[in-house]
Structure formats: C-alpha cells, structure tokens
Image 1 (tube, one colour):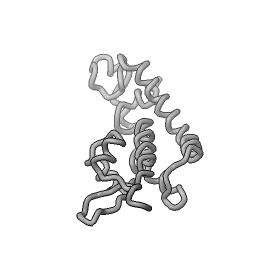
Image 2 (image 1 turned 120 degrees about the vertical axis):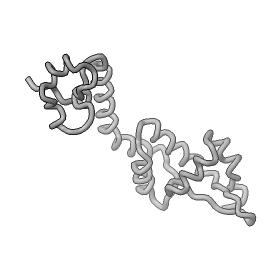
Image 3 (image 1 turned 30 degrees about the vertical axis):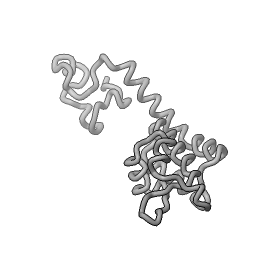
Length: 151
C-alpha cells in the first residue's frame, strides 16, 4: 500500500462524515484498522471509507456493533464489503428487520392503549391485566411486545 492510499484521521473523518472519536471507537471494536505515521498519528487506508459506509448503513437499519463485527468477519481477508457482500448480508438481516417493523406497527397501533405494565391507569389495568398477569410473561411492556391480554 502506498502512502498515497493512507489518509490522516482528520481528513478521513471528514470524508466519512463522522467524528474522529467515532473512528477510534470503531477501531477499538475491531471494525476498522489503521496504520501509524512515524510520529504516531493514525492513518487509514482509503478503502476503509467503504467499510465505514457499511458500518453506518448497518447501524441505520438497527444492527448492533457486535452484529456488524460478525458480518464483517465473514469477509475474506478482512476486505471491504462489495455490492455482492452487501446484498448477501442484507438478505440475512431481513427477518430481523421484519420483526422490528412488526414491533413498530404494534407500537403505533397500540400506543394510546394499555401497555400491560400497570402504569397508565390502575382502573383500566385492573380490567386488562387483573392481578398483573402480564408480569408472568416476562419483563417490559408485554402487550406492546406482542402478548395479548388474557381473555
């Protein structure tokens, strides 16, 4: 790799549209790699810009950094993702996205109703959730998570 292919962290951050601290964090998480100048400054291979774009796109669809790291680990030799890689990985993420979309639709449709935790209206929850039976199904707002009130 020639020195022309290495970009100082400040310029790289500007080109990527993120803060230098985010780049350092991604590097700590093993998502990016950098080289060091003779003075110890971080230099990023220009190709890592595509990797940052991949990370940001994956985050925008709700993937966690561990999920993203696992996806990047499937690429041969740690190379940057290609369009074909993105298509393959995005197909694998579709069930996750479908379940999140379903949860958001439930949230939208039930937002003004009881969420099954007893906090909105003790009188109304006594009808929908007598004896706090929703708590037996697990933590959180059980009805918004898809559980139905007992008949």
